[in-house]
Image (tube, rainbow, N blue to C red; front, top):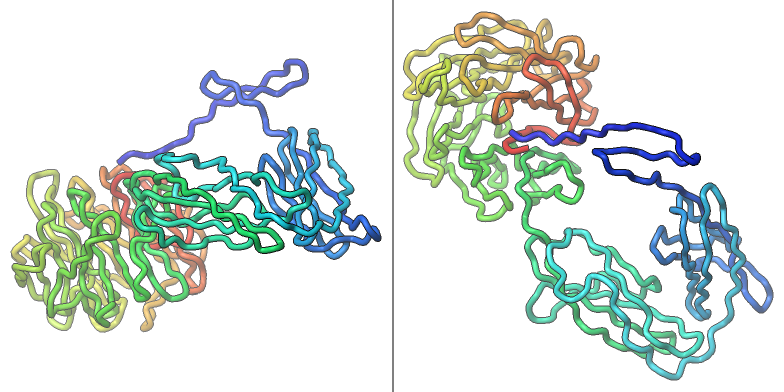
Amino acid sequence: MRHFYLLIRLSISMCLSVIIFSCNESTVDPKLYGSISGTVTTSEEGLPMEGVSISTSPGTTSVSTDVEGKFLLDDVLVGDYSVSAKKEDYTGVNTSIKVGEGQEVVMQIIMQIAPDETLAPAETVYVTPIDATANLATEIELVWNNGETEKGDTLFFDVILYEDGEFEGDTIAEGIMDTTFVATNLKFETNYRWKVDASNRARYKTEGREWKFKTEDFPKNGYLFVKDTLGSKNIYSWDLADNHLIALTNLGGSEVNPRISPNEELIAYASNQTSAYHIYTMDAKGENVFKVTNDKSVASYHNNGNGFVWSPTGDQLLFGHYGELYSINYNGTGENKIANAPVDREFKSCDWTEHYNNTSQEKIAVLTQGEKPYDNEIYLMNTDGSDLFLLVDNLEGTLSNPHFSPDGTKVIFSLDSLFEDDNGRQLNAKIYSIDIDGTNITNLSGDDKLAGTNDLQARFTETGGKIVFMNVANDGEGEKSIWIMDIDGSNREKIITNGEMPDLYNP
């Protein structure tokens, strides 16, 4: 597993009263800021003008004047700017200013009523992205300039964007007066065309030419997790960069428990789109969805689609269906019952290793559960269901989510000891490890876990160097977040907010 760390070596020296930051032997000037404020009034009666659009070039933040005609642009980088004031029926005003460090530039802008318009505006002049620009982000700023116009022309712009092919573009901005617009939620690996049509108050319109760009390749995100938005659970992938957070499912139901295949080509998950939870697969782009399970769902006591795992070779999936444990080929064929649960118990979750006890031996770990959510045990067994071994007895409290270490010498799980609730609530669930012979139970959450929270859904990362897990408040109301820690429980770090059911395979 690859981890990305930002290593900053900071040395500070004083030279000519300038602070220089040294990072890897290169120098970076500190960012200095000022601000711009002002009042906009009419030329005729000097009345304040509300709703005037204020923008700058180079771009900062666009604002509108308030009822007193006032505006404020805060935290503006020092430098030279052109401040633009625009409002329908008035002649636009552009004023050049200089912003100094810690200074507030105060402006008084006077706007005149625009004269009648008799001609169509000239074609807009494109700035960026220029024709055939490639490998752009999926959020991009479109920039253009006014063409030549009659004196006092007030211009309005329609921004049209569409995927390459026949022109059937969506108007993503209509009647705006600014000359920039940020296009968001674009697709990866996609050719786009865009154009800007200009019109004036007389509704004379001039269509712009079409320009092209291509977005970047689909990223290989190594973080999979589930987000709950308004009661709908969806699967996301992320590389922890804001522009690479990708929703892989959006079906309106619940898609849960994403698990990457050993060859990292398919993601298995459970979905209740047919009412019961069944196993599906999709590729890393969220495409080519395939329903794997047939008449048998992923189901047991208090289970919402979490009880399945890939085989080590990636050709099968293992899942519990009430009191029966099944394997099935990833293409939906070859369903085979492996084992029956002990009497009055059902299979809730499972894991499958190919390196049991540091040898080339496959082994399965299963959590069986009775009718009560705290009535559970963890067993080990061979892949044919034989040689059943009770690893963790029915301890007081709730057990969940057994998971092998990559070398097959330990199993980690969560346990909320000394508390049992018929509704499944947990007060103080912690992550534990246990040797595969049933000895050496170790509390990994320790004293670093936040009071009043539960550590759940723990998994070793791909190489076994870290443990990733979900932490949530025990009142059922708090935000679920994803954390990572060393295998001894030290160095806990929150990496994702509003996330659960993590799987890290290539971070």
